[in-house]
Every structure is written in structure tokens, then in C-alpha cells.
Image 1: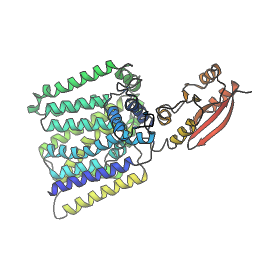
Image 2 (image 1 turned 120 degrees about the vertical axis):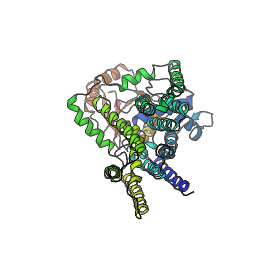
Image 3 (image 1 turned 180 degrees about the horizontal axis):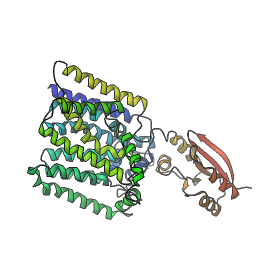
Image 4 (image 1 turned 135 degrees about the horizontal axis):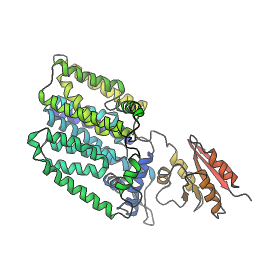
Length: 478
């Protein structure tokens, strides 16, 4: 009963923290706005095949769309379905919040299955609940949290010898994000380092292959370019191997981001130090040591791959390292010398971890989603929506973000030109009598755009300035 209560308290703590994050007044990151625009199209317009330039598999987007239908979608007096952009934020982030809470319970079950140690399981759950990465990416609409949850679920079923279930979960991870491919080496290591599991490879591969086939069928049925083709164009580097001169800087950048995996930097370093100390203080069981070696090998290989290859250095790309890192650290903490002070030290460590997490939330995490960069974009959208029907809005920089907050049924003509010269040429070619508007950013140089329009004979006047957004009214002379 005590074990059950301890696990329940950790899950409840995770729930409180996740719903606190969900309640923050923070706007979408550009990638969130992109994915959830597709989700809104499905929820409001019924575009469930997600037509358009999508470069991700659909599962996370479908979960967001279903949540929108369940929690945010309303019909007006004419029966037209509408979704308030801020209500859409809540609905879009809710599935990841639920998965983040379930991940905490799952990590405790996984640790218990691997190490047969209740103290290690409780430590794994607490570290997961308080991880800045789980706190930062739980209440978001990124596809990475779905990838993390289903890949961890696959790992759990693999350890429980539920091989077909493991293949099914790994297939669902692919349905969230193509980067699930990077989890296959860990799965193969876990299979082939255990002679009893090798014969189960086929059982795991069957549902995985079926879900992969269904994903390709879904992709072929879409009235748009393949998500895999666009994903390779948008995400794979033109030069696969990064310049060797950049390797030290890239490694330092990954270290700067990874130092927040288990807590604030001092907490992450302290936990790793305690784990190392426990390893040499009493030694570790052969089973515990062999598993830790596999996990550490995967972590090292993952970081080396992302250092040597010219992948983008996004903080969320480190999420797959969270479960192996937590398992390694949590499995060695209970191996510290036990005595009369053990319970007091454990309780003190747990309280310190909670306080560190609260401090991190209070001071703002340097990882995660938008982190306030697009604060006020909803006011900008409201201002633009107040303009006459079919008003032309030139939008060189905001893209998906502005499109989402303008709403599903906005009646403006939003136009994108990649350069100042093409904007001026397009503006001249458009036979438009009414005023037009150029949306610019305070912290993004736009003087060339203003100069190009003035050179073309247009008259510009500042019409809106709030937060980091500026809007210029564009009028024809005379």
C-alpha cells in the first residue's frame, strides 16, 4: 500500500505540474502553429487527410484535432463550426499533457521491470515528473512528446516480453514522427544482447511492418506531396557530415541543452555524480550494470551521431535521451550505502528535486516552445481582422503563426513574398484601390522592404505598434 501511495503521489505531482504548464498564457511556437493548423482544418473543415505541405506523420495531429472537436469546437447560430484560437491552443496541447502524465507512470513500471527495485522505480518516476524537458514539452503541440511516449511504451513491452505489443507501440511512434527510426538501434541492442529475445524479433517486426505499410498507404492517399519527401527536403541537411571544425561547437551546444535533462544544471550534474559515486561505493548488480552499459552506449552514439551529422540543433531532439538517462541515474541511486540516514537523505533529495523544478518554472526554462516570443500575436490578429473584407496583408515573416491566430474563417488576403524586390513588383502588379498592410517585426530588419515599396511609389505610414509587431499602412499616391 505504501508503494502504491508513493507512486500515486508522484503521478499526482506530475499532473499538477503539467496542468499548471497547460494553464500558461503563451502562444504557439511556429512549428506548433503549423501542425495545429492542419489539426484545425481536420476538426473544422473535415480535412482528415491533411492536404498541404505537411512533413510529419499524422498521429499527433489527429490527437490534436480530436481534442479540438471534444473541448474547443462550437457552432454559431448559423451552424458554422468555429474554434477560438486560444481555445484551440488548450485543446491542441491537452493530448501531450495527458501523455506526459502517463509517461511518469510508465517510467516507474519500466524501471521496475528492468531492475526489480522499487526504490529505483520511484526515483525514475520522480525524475521524469520533474524533468525540465517533460515540463517544457508536455504542454505543447509538438509531435516529439508522442514520439517519446510511444517509444517508451515499446521499450516497456519489450522488457515485459510483449513483443507484438512492443512492435505496435514502436509503429505508433513512427506515426508520430519519422525520427522513431533512430530508436531502432536501441531496440535491436535490447533484443540481441539477450539470447532469449532474439527469436522474438519476428514477432516484434510484424505489427511494426503493418503499421509502416498503413502509414505509406495513408501518405499515398493524400492529395499532396508525400510527407516523407517533404520531411527529407525540410530536415535532412544538404551536406550530411558537418564541417569537422564545427564538431566541438556542436558538441558544446548539445551539452548546453542536455544539461537540463534531469533538472537545472547543478541538479543534473549532482545526480550524475551521485550515480557514479554509488557505482563505485558498493558496486552494482551484474544485471543493473549490463543494462546501464547498453543505455549509456545508446546515449553516446545518439549524441555522436547528432554532432557529426549536420542535423538541426533543436532542444526537443534530445527528448529520446531522457528515458535511458533517467534509468541509468535512478538505478544507481538506491545503491548508495544504506543506513539510518537513508530515508532522511532520500526524502531530502526528493524535496530538493521538487524545489529545483519549481525554481526552474518560476525563473523560466531555457528550453521548450515559444517561451513568450509571440506574445501579443492574438492582438495583432484581432487588429488585422478588423480591417475591411479582402484587405491585402503582406506577411513576409510570420507565416503559420499569423495564419493560425487570424482564425479558420478570416476574410483577408494574406500574401507572402520572399524578398523586398518581389514584394514591390507584386504590389505594383496588383490593381488594388484600397489600403494594404505590411506586417513587420521590431527585431527583424525590414528597412529594405520599406525602401522598396517607397521606391515603387507607395506611401507608407505606421498604423500599429505593439509588443514586437509593427504594421505599416500602404497607400497608392493620389
